[in-house]
Length: 203
Image (cartoon, rainbow, N blue to C red; front, side, top):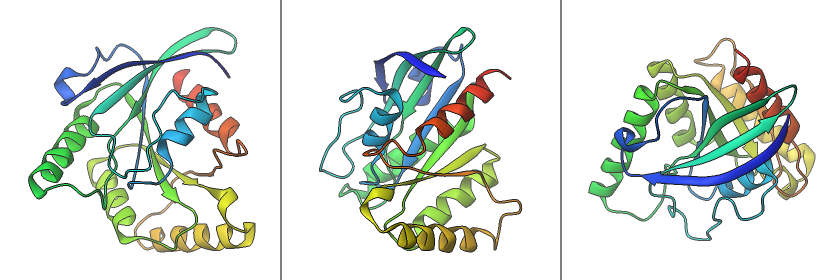
């Protein structure tokens, strides 16, 4: 699958304000500072599509991007950049509002095909990631794991962290969710993620 066009469409504060659910949609979410914007830019081959910030918690709205891809035919779909969860320095009331906004979006968006949950491959297993993944399971939302920043560590350390994370998930999950190891710098994992999106688009 080739990305023919990728452009920012709209940012909305609630699920109700999102664009009409008339095409497949794929959401990206992760802890603050996990490398979400860099990954989105890498997937779309567009340097400044999603804004990269050094300030965790910069994404505060539901951000829709319109994508046109081609293979045998042209397909339109939405890519969605969701606010991160975790240590962003925000008030309790703002955090609760974000959590409610994200939950409403994830549970009520009819055209949502898959959620890509980003995990920092440089780190050992974080409870907050496991908790979020278990929530998706409880809500019966299809998702995949994307381990980011694989270029920032030795390959053996990345594999160790990924294996540790999947080992922790095995306590609750059988079978394990599909996972990808990625690098926004080298493009690792790009073809595999786009291949899954193409496969889901054709259903």
